[in-house]
Amino acid sequence: KAGKYLIGIHVKDKYSKENLDDFIYENYTVTVSKAKLEKVEVSYDGNVITNGEIGVGKSYVIKGYGNSENGV
Image 1 (tube, one colour):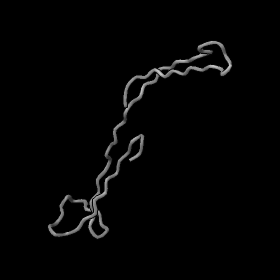
Image 2: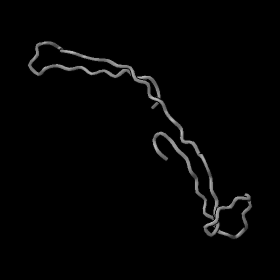
Image 3: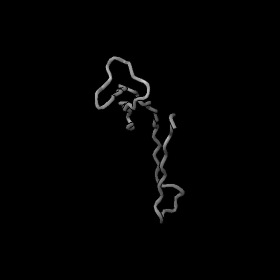
Image 4: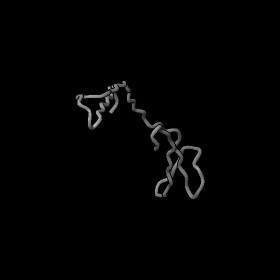
């Protein structure tokens, strides 16, 4: 989930008489990236349609190309 987080780690030696031997805290910001559609391609019989016109009753292959930091 996107937001600001404070990450903390506490350590203690197993034989220490102290409640806590050491600790560290660090701030982190988590951001969300959205996927971006770069290109849509429609083809018929292996040929890409370039004029924007398709016919009734035919089967077309539609491909979308995009990217995201996390993969698409």
